[in-house]
Length: 566
Image: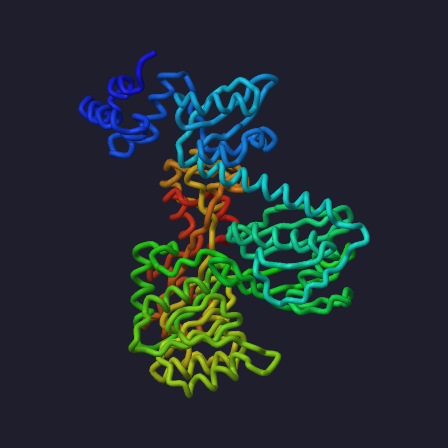
């Protein structure tokens, strides 16, 4: 058998000089040759794997195949050993176990696996990073499943309530009775999984036969566990205690809130409980759970749109409105805009419901309608606080709209959001709230509609050719239909969706002189839209098509997030 160094040189993966240098260093080191070559930057992991494949006949394995590992087989190798040696057991036959590893020449590790499993070992090879990620996720899922099973097995059929009285949950630090422990454990596991996956919502849904638990990842619900029906009362009671709700009330809807403390951050949780025919359904909204990017350049803007947006947020006065449904990333964009313009020389104040993220150097006011602190009442007080920039979480009524307009007309910059389908209909919505056209046209600088689309998992994707029907449904330009198109391949790492992460698409309407005149004339939204398109506005669907051509998302996502251009 040829040595790996010879194979690498013969296939021009490295030079002979690089090989000799690495061999010389190896004589005074316990590192393997490939490790030295990679460390010096002479060789990539991918080319080393190709060399190993030529040398040993071991088959390189895709990341998608790693996530097809059988949990029962994976457990044959202890987690500590798997992480230390970077190996993953995938499947087995009667006398042979299939193992993924980076170095098929690592005979001590192969011999150790034989002793651990009492099986023969077949090897497939993968990169260290892919292996490391798969090991973390698969063993994490196995551990989580085991903890859930353990908690469920300890549930007494007669159990149904918890006695803990804390309102702030510090994960991992609870001291509870043996009777309550299973419910505490299940609730903690649900919360931990949701936080780990950067989920925005948790749904606990009772049915006739089970309790389904789903979390919203990248805007889509994914099922994570199914506790038995007899666990429902205990789970709901635990959440009611934490959110200071009435445990005894099971007939009426209830709303509450609680806080979760982790080692990294504090998360505000909104709790909604709704009675159903099979018991109480719970939805938890996690605020501040995700990894917030406050850099405008990371929010999906094209270069041109980013320049336009930055130009208008740096104006000294006027109104900037962002529209979109709940969960479309409006708050993140607004926070990023505030961070972009923040300086010690200006006073920035926000009025929000709720305050999702705390920003350093910015005065943030939380609404409390139950005590009379509404948007309108807060704004009247804030006007006396000498602000330069004001962010209003949402314009919901005429009074709030009037204050926002007057504030922008007196030399201040106002940011806010409105629920509307697109940028032109946002203007119509503001007019419907009772803002006179001459005032709206005078103060409005920019309107932007925003949506979020899931991005293709870049580590698990394939090329494909969309059908003519899909092209036509989307209104895809005929001269662009021969480009390369990608779609994600589902695996355990992306929850079998083929997507990982989200990006924003934007529709930006600049309120220039011509647009102001249309607003003054009380033009309808179709007239405004047509004028905006003639001025160069890219619609949401067109923005989605641009993301498809960039290989960041696919046709199905754009169809899901946008409507046909009229």
